[in-house]
Every structure is written in C-alpha cells, then in structure tokens.
Amino acid sequence: DYEQLRLLLQRDDGAVVYLNGIEIARSNMPAGPITSATFAASTVSGSAEQTFFPIVVNRPPLLTGTNVLAVEVHQVNLTSSDLSFNLELRGGNPEPLVPVAAGSVWRFLDDGTEAPAAWKDLSYVVPATWKSGAAQLGYGDGDEITVVEGGPASARYTTTFFRQTFTVDDPAAISQAFVRFLRDDGIVAYLNGVEILRDNLPEGTLTSATRALIAIGNADESLWHRVPVDPAAFQTGPNVLAVQIHQASATSSDLSFDLETLLYTREALPSLSAALSVGSTIDLKWPKWAAGWQLQESPDMKTWNNVPSTPIVSNSGTELSVPNQPLARYFRLVAP
Image (tube, rainbow, N blue to C red; front, side, top):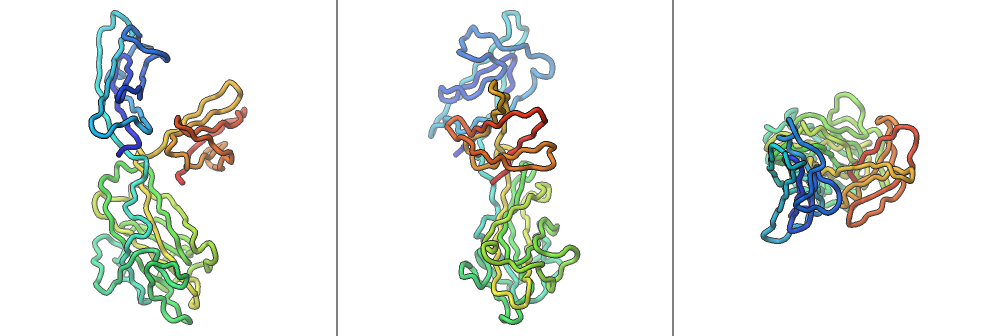
C-alpha cells in the first residue's frame, strides 16, 4: 500500500528507529553499531527539544498485517536533565494523484456554435445537447476512441469545446501540479474559469472563429506536452477543466485531444542529495522509485540543462557522479 513512509520524530537527545527489526532512521546519533551505552551525538536544548524532524523512508520494510515500530532514545551524557520522545508515522505513495486521467470521459460541444460565456465556470450546468465520450477525442486519424463532428470537409468547424469536472480532497497538500495534453491543432484550457495553458494559438481574446497558428501534422499530432499549474488554482471539492481545440484551417483533415492532470504532494516529491567526493566529483543521489526523473543542472538557477549521463539504479537508490567545478552549480529533478 505504501512505497514511502514519512516519520515526524521528536527526540531529546538522540534516537534510532526500527521497523520490523530493520533500522529505518537514525537522528543525532553516531554512526556504527549502537548499544544501550551509546551516547547521543550532541546535546538537544531549547526549541529543538520540541521540534519534529521529518524523515522520509523509501521502500519501507512493511509486512502484510501487523507491523512494529521500535525506538530507542539515547541521552548525551549521564547527567542529562531531561528526556523527550514523540513520533508520528504517515504512509504515502510517491506516485502523483491523477484526478483527470488520460482517456477520461469528457462532455463536449461539436456543432460549430459558440459556447456560452459561462461554460468555463464550475457553476455552469451542461445542457443535455452536449455529447460525452472517452478520450482520445477527435476525427481523421483513426486512433480516436470517440469521434467528434468536424463539419463538412471543405468547411470544418473552427472550435470544439470540452469540459470535465473532478474532485480534489486537499489542495493544500499539493506541492507541484502539471497538465499533460495532446492537441491538434491549437489548445486553450481553463481551470475553474481561469486560463492555465495556451498552445499554438494567438494572444488576446479568443472566440470560436479564432484559428490555430499553424497546422499540426505527423508525429506532433500524437505528442504529449506538459505545463506546470499553480497548485493554488485547485479548489477543495469540485473543480472543472474547460478546453477549446481550434483548427488551423477550414479544410483541416483531423482533430485530436486528450488531457490529464498530475498532482504531486510533498510526500510524492523525491529528495535530492549532493555530496563532495574525495575524488573531486559531486555525488548525487535520489530515491529508487524516482529513477525516471530527469536530473538537471544550472549555473544561475535561471537556465537549466539536462545532465546527459545515465544514473546507476540499485536497491539503495539512484546515483550519479559528475565532475566538480570551481564555479557554483545547482541541481534539480524534473518530473517525467
């Protein structure tokens, strides 16, 4: 059920945590074997005594049914005046939440008319005259699940309207959000009435008569694109995505549309660590489950480039070593 556990550990002074007999966390303790006589690494005092330290455990050694956590708290010396312990355990899955998946069923208007101004709003009641069908939606390519009406071959409808409602339980828990989409030719999308993406369409006000900038063809017709979305745009409870697909010409031979949302919680984001090696390299490491994430580097946190080297994936995680340089370098992981 859980590919990741998140511990919130309060300890004064040090602690070691075991899950089903296997050590999964160590905080303010020395390296090496631990006995009941081992002192903590340093004194904990002041606000640190009440601090909960977050610890992420990837691929935890969980068992079906009953599990046991065992924690030993160590003092820093024999005259320590106090001891504190508390722990919270949260289970999580590093996979993103996908409230709108590829291939979902959409309501759509495909008769060549202009949708009402309120059609993008959550409160809009979709008329019974709107059709519904599963993506991929479109015509002309032969790979559509649902064929939409495109109009006469010599006078194609310029714009087709698609609408989808979905639920988000806790938007505050979302750290990163993305929309992935497939379009032919142009696309504009709105989340709860606010525009969140526009691709291959002119700037300014759009109407049902607005043409896409260029005709999309060949492999680009089936290419998935991804754009980030502000997590604050999602609302607790019902949300609505409204999408317009625009054709580039009146004689367009095909139309394609599909879309999905990817919502990453804090627990679903991999941690990236960097350490300077004795051999003048920078050793980077991130969780095994995030092996498909792309490592990027930057000299200024403005321009980012993919690191071309292939990382090594093992049971202990994903690792990659890069040459150290005298200038500052920044690293990040980008979702696939």
